[in-house]
Every structure is written in C-alpha cells, then in structure tokens.
Image (cartoon, rainbow, N blue to C red; front, side):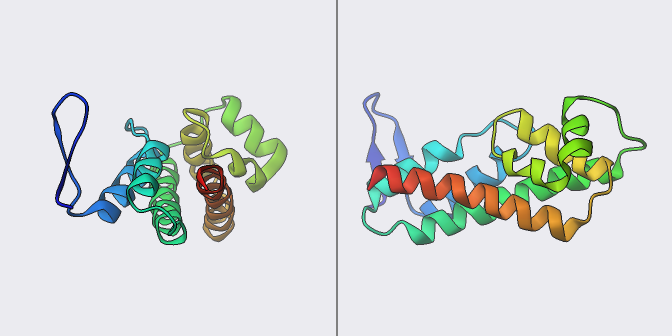
Length: 142
C-alpha cells in the first residue's frame, strides 16, 4: 500500500496518509490554498470503516491552522473593518463556527486575532465548528 496510481498515471504516495491529511487540513485553514475535505474523502475511501481517527486528525490540523491565522491577526497593527470583523463584533466568538467556510473562515480567524478575542474561546469554537464539518463528511460517506 505504498503507492496508488490515478487515472493520469501519476503516483500518489500513501506512506504517511495521516500526516498528509493533517498537513492538508492545517494548510486549508490558512490563506494558502488547500482542500482538506478532498484529503479526508480520499483517506476514508482508502481506509473505510475507521472514520474517527482521520476525523480527529483533520479537526486538529484545521483548528491549529485557524489558530495560526488568529495569531497573524494578533500581530497586525490595528484591526481593519470588513465583513468578518463586523460579524465578529455582532455575533462574537460564535461567528467562528463558520471558520470552515472557504475565504470567509480565513478572514474570521484573522479578525478574531485583530479584535483580541480570548484565545481559549476561539480555540473551543474553532474546534467545534471544524469537527462538525468533518463528522458530517465522514457520516455522508458511511
């Protein structure tokens, strides 16, 4: 189970699939492009019937990636007013339940840092929102 050949003949390395899933999930939660849903889907197809470990790995990676964006926001000189910061001012830390949504989620995490929201609440809400998304993906595949 070291390699898998896709339709184009390219080799996909599978020696470290959980590490790859973690990396994909982490990068997907930053401003860098990524697709952790596809990585989770591929892993669950490769190793069916065991969804909880990859869901936990993806959730951890995505949460830590979101926290890295939060850290970038904390380092910013001053908050810039945009839709994300308005949502955070209106709904507070609960707006971060949408941190998994592409583009919006990155801005929400950075905005939470700009606004100096308490990191433990940010971590908890990120973890819940991201876990719910990955559980939904895994459930849909079962």
